[in-house]
Image 1 (tube, rainbow, N blue to C red):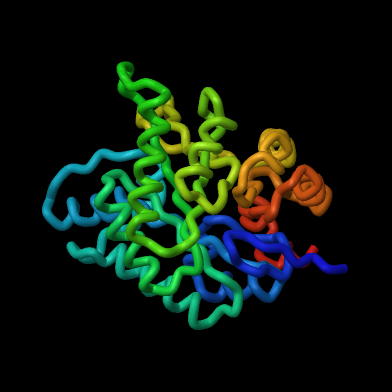
Image 2 (cartoon, rainbow, N blue to C red):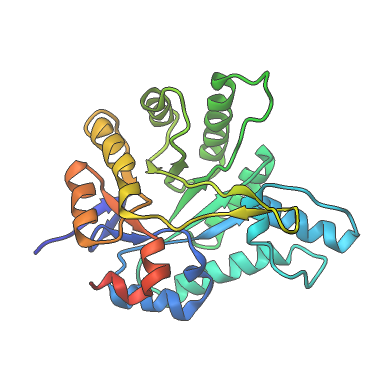
Length: 279
């Protein structure tokens, strides 16, 4: 069976692409993903807030940021830009040791950071760039149009400075998702990944502490992405990636039938291991 496809201008042997997860932090697990049949690999996200946290610890400054970023904060080791260097070095290692394309994943706060880090990821050899924009509009005076414009400006600025294909990883929390994705298409995006899943703050009623909470997906979660990919298919000039809820071959087939170019896997691999791709 010929399972070849294209995604972000990349020729892939099949449509199964592991999404951003801790599995890409380790060369051994990344190689196991490739051996099991992964056609490409999305690296774990580089969070600007991780780097800010690391720098703040080095300077003795209290840090408060988004729950998703804090969940991945490593034990502090050096008061330098070690987090960025570790990411770039891991990207270079994966590019050297893997034969499949490697897509870097970037999450930032400030416009200048998106551009600077985007350039560094390109120089380190990334084949494409996934923008994992984790933004919650807590300002009650900020409109939906303001939020969308923030994404558009980030995309345009990066496109002006980086020659990589860019895909936008989006949440479903937009009031007119189809129109917004059309705007991303017009602004130069090469693809969209549907959908991002947010870490939610949870309260431990015994300790009265707040902490991040994220449940792994189930097959039922794939239905939302399937619906929107079907709505978008043939109506935008973008590659469509389905993420969240693909746990079985049947799940993947449904998403592909709806129009997805690739199917991302994360929870299924965390539960069952990299070799599950072969199944």
